[in-house]
Length: 415
Image (cartoon, rainbow, N blue to C red; front, side, top):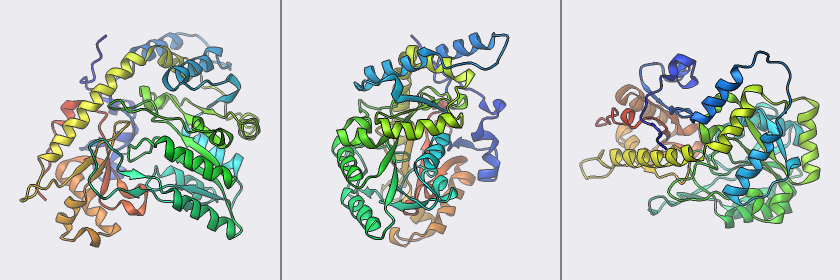
C-alpha cells in the first residue's frame, strides 16, 4: 500500500491554527510554521472515508457512543502494548487539555499542589495555575556528556522527586497530584521501566495521584517501545489516570477525540462521576467513528508515517551538521527523538554566537534574539523552548511533520 507524505496539503485554507495564529505569534505570516504539534500530512484514507460516510447522514441529533469505540481501543492496546483493558476502565474525554482541566477540578481543590517535571508541555503548569492550584517542580536532569544518537538526553531525578514530596509534606501542604508526560513532550524521551516504577512507588507512598499523558505513545521511532505507566507495577495501577488519543497518531486533532483509562475503582468513580454529572464525556458525533476506523484500519498508514518521519529527522540532522562555525562545530544540535515528530533542538551555541555571550552568561531575555534569527533571517516559526521551563534558554522545539520538500527550502544563515 502506497502513502504519499510528499503531497503538499494547503491547510491554511481550512483555518489551521498554525497558520491563522502565525502573525500574532511571530509578527508575520509569510514563514514556514514548524511550531504547533500537528501534522501537515493527509490523514489516513480510512478516516477520510468514514467521515464521508457519516456526513451523508441526514440528521445530526443526540446519539450514543458506539460499542465498537471501546472495543477498538481495547484491541489496539492489547496488540500494541500487551495491556488488557476492561470496558469500564475507559471513558471518552473531549480532548486532552479539557480532560486535564476536568481532572484538576475532580481530583484537587483550590490551593492544592500539583507536581510537574520541567521541561514539559506548558499546559501542565499553566492550566493548574490559572485555576488556582500551586505548581511544584521536580526538574528533569539534562545529561551533559555526549550521548549516543537516539539515546535519552534527560533522565528523571527520583531522589529529587522524593525530596520535594517530603519537604511539602513536612510543610503541611502535601502534593496531591502529579502530571506525568509519558512520552515526554518536548524532549522526545521514552521513560524507562525503572524510572516509571521508581516514580510510581514514590508517589504511591506519598498518596499522590498521577495523571499520565500518553498522547504520543504510538509514534515510536527506530524500534523504540512505549511503556504505559499504569502497567509497570501494582502501585502505578492504583494511582494512575491515563490519558491517550488517536489524534496525534493519525492526525485527527481537529476531531477532538481522546479517552481516559483508570483501573482503580475508587479513583475511577471520582473522575468518571465528575465527567458524567457534567456531561463532559458526551461523545462527539464526528469523532467516534473515525477513531474506530483509525484503530481498526490505520496501522499500515502509521508504519509508513514513522518511516517518513525518521527520514525527515535524518535530513534535519544533516542540515544542522553542515551548519558550523569556523572550527567545524555545529551551531545547532537536534536531539534525536525516540518518539513523535517533534525535535528538541539545542541552539545554545548559535545563541552564544548571536549574543556574544558564553553559555553560562545566557539569560531568558536572550531567547528573543534566537526567535528573531529563525523568524526574520531563516523564515521559520519554531516553538520557543522557554515555554517549557526557565532552564530552556537556547532551546527550540521543531515540528518535522511536513513534506520533505518543505524542509529542503530551509537555509540556515551565518549568525
